[in-house]
Length: 343
Image (cartoon, rainbow, N blue to C red; front, side, top):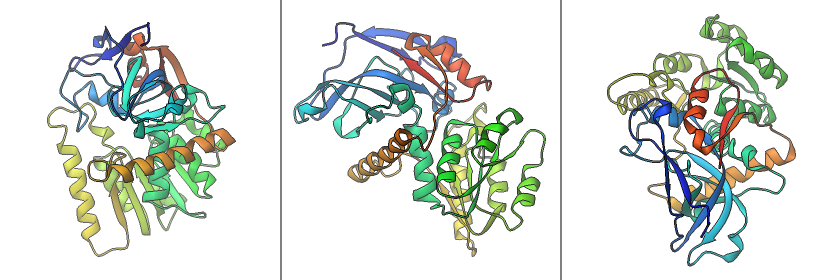
């Protein structure tokens, strides 16, 4: 057992970032098929921003420990786990529970981190990298020569998505505020300022026949505009409802409305397709298949980072006990890249 003991961050209810609580306890013990990971890096994602408002559509009841993903070293393993896993650096996607010094997970849910890839760098790509890779290659199946629109191209998912699309030979149009435009241009993309330009008009100017795919995390009215910008045979991939982050009322209703739109669009006699992407899709019904895809895709993502094909942006690294400050910083809209928490 680790002599340091367990330290974890608790989200007690709908609170300001400063309302997060620090709790100490005993390091968990690995059960059969499980490992205990000593966390080295965990991140602040948009999911936690929604959760503290009670707006994440399937979050657990308060209080709970947030933290969507983590990277760390396997401290101990339970019965049925090969001894070779202990002492290795792994990544895990957990949805909640990652903001802790020690996290217990099923060994089958861990993915090895390659040598030479740092914990913080790997952490920025766990949920963001898998989401970007799967939406681009498994859902939209973007090919060389196609043109895509990425909303929020400076965000955690959008920035990785743009890099993978560029690697695949696609042209990227990305929406972002002006201060992020040079970064997109450096990666071969074309920026559109959503604050000062008519996005739909500008995209139609850049792609008169429509775009081959749109990746929309905004939801609301944006997703309807995204659908209208598709070329024949194009694909809309909706993967969030960021526009409703600060709304009151039901947290499920925006997702239900979005799913209804997707169903209706796909039922229409047209050549376009719409999807609502959920990184957890299939886990409840086909856990082995879900794990195999996650392992394969995250391995691809880490490999791209190891080869230098993609880059990562770390906005800041703060200690776990400063999670409130980290969450406030991530929500400020003043940083580029991911805010990472360290032990």
